[in-house]
Length: 301
Image (cartoon, rainbow, N blue to C red; front, side):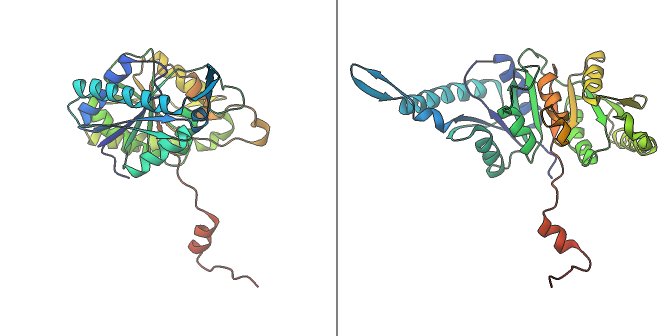
């Protein structure tokens, strides 16, 4: 993965205008010298709607597309005034999450930057577009709450859990830390039922601290913490230290007994009051890939 941020994608739905978010997005782009992509997705289900007037049925599809094009032009003009980099604005039709992820892959996006209104809880049994994008993105996703107004991330909270790809997350956070001249707070945290991981977590803290020090990034190390609900403690540490950014690995797994409860990532998405950088989970090998990787594959009989 290329850790340099050269292309930033901003999905917008135009339901509300957030000047603070646009200024933050422009500041991120300017610091990294990144091209800005603004994407509006019109759900295809809305294009078939219409209304009756004077005995005639009028479809809303064309009007919605025309409105989207006008608003995109406005957003493009606004972003060009506050950023030094190129701005590309497009709209798409279909599933919001699907189109955002498709665009991200096609345009070699390095970071998806999203404005969010945290609902504090999971919206029923339907996942939000934000969560679907985070859970399935191949690149980091940064969420910015609407009430957040800092344009620089000077205090970064870096939780270290026993999950895959935590080392890769460090490689993505380091360029952000350097561009923001940030302090990185390392905190090892794990569930109570996995205390056998104490030594492993402690080693990771030391290794990560040395890597950051070698890159001339200021580091703060916290004591190892065990938690019944890691997501709550991570968010609490972020609040206590007034962190500007929390970097977490995406974890979407849940057991059958937790089927109707939020998983780790959902809890962070729906509860955090601070910007969060979600690093994608490591892709699991398909059965075919595992078969090929076997040293002595078993042939069917």
